[in-house]
Image (cartoon, one colour):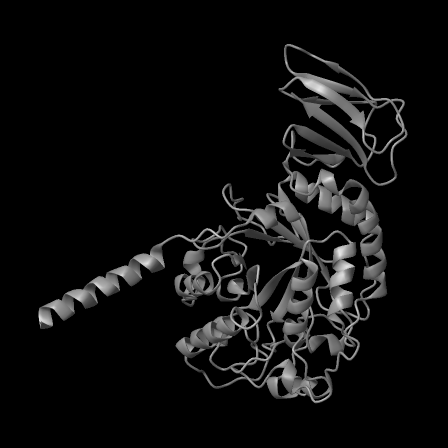
Length: 440
């Protein structure tokens, strides 16, 4: 009898092990189609109007920073307004900071008192209101979740390179912190309906600044356990981790911070390989900071945003464009205006980016190309000469300007497959001149 019980126990353990190792493949068709999403950074840091890293940058000690809970009062927050702004811009999903590096939770968590429900003048669950409205309007909701915590003693701050000036002296237990994160993630994936993704950030805090490998981590993040937990609670919940390194097993799409895939203009993507097997997303700010900064007025123009969106699509990637609402809960009017103007463009020409893949050539300074089935879209941001030559291997059925009232002339070199488009007599669009090519 004892042998039988032991055998059953061993078989059960083996089953659990196999289950935990079974790869999960969430349905990412929606992400491939989306191409455009809204990033929202919002929390107590918004009150200080100096960006989301203000606790680290000043620095501010935990006991002082937590006073923000008493007067963080986003009384003008309206989930319906936020979602409408995103939807009208042509965005298909929202990624919201459920918890940023200061550790403040924007939902009704039972794991910490440092949360939105304990704000004396507001006391509402932002994640719930946003989730309900997203579900109602058909907008996917992804939840940003910081791996860093500048307020907890059990986060291993003494080996990290941020949060050193936050006044902590006690060193807590790392496993306690891992269990805390698991409990919070369980709440988020149990109490708010379908969550399209979890977007992690902060892994880099526990690596040397010049590291390009996961092997240099000073802590064990328990990723297999955490990823398995997420996929078990919601099998179609996709995981992304903004660690600036190659994707790990269990991650469902790859994040690039302030860089297009394969580029490294900001330094975040140095050494980061581009995945060939999972979807990609690049995140970018509307101005200079992620969280609200009262002095940051360097907003990107509507044209710049559209060009970035098109180039991202040209790499087969999504653009996650950030807004940092003001402390009262309103999205800044400068952001709203630009998103309305981008929305005017996506309503007319969204078919050239939604559901497309990278096109005939990689994005160039002058434009980009996308592809959907037998249709190619060539986006020209500027007139770089009187001709454009691109290799198109299949026979052309038709080619035309999509948004220019002009006849498009072209010639084909049958030996090479090079197609030369005549640009001489075209009056270019102020933002993006688009050639539609249908091949056999």
